[in-house]
Image 1 (cartoon, rainbow, N blue to C red):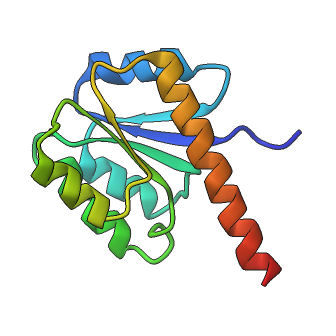
Image 2: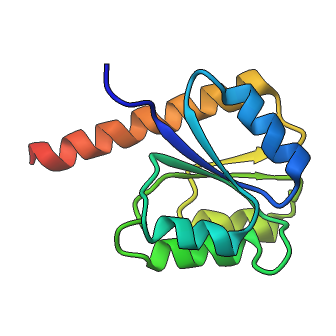
Length: 134
């Protein structure tokens, strides 16, 4: 069996980050990062399989961070799941236009989050397979 799937979890709330790490421990390799700025620095060197991204963060919010991720050539195709308490239409539409794979509201259900992660990873593998097939 290959290396564990890497998930970059970006949230400036340490309790949320700890919860994500705890909920996904054993299933994935979780890389916790507490700011959008640090996440972008990390992505210049590493390419995780999936990103869990909070919207409401100090300095650089999740939407700004996502915009910059999509501008990075090596990272624009990394699937992103937004984890947030924001549920206004404008935010949902903006993140959809930036190509998020899922939008999960906080507080999230662990089982629901795991299922969504699995679904997104499966869809991503299918897309990669189709690209290399054609």
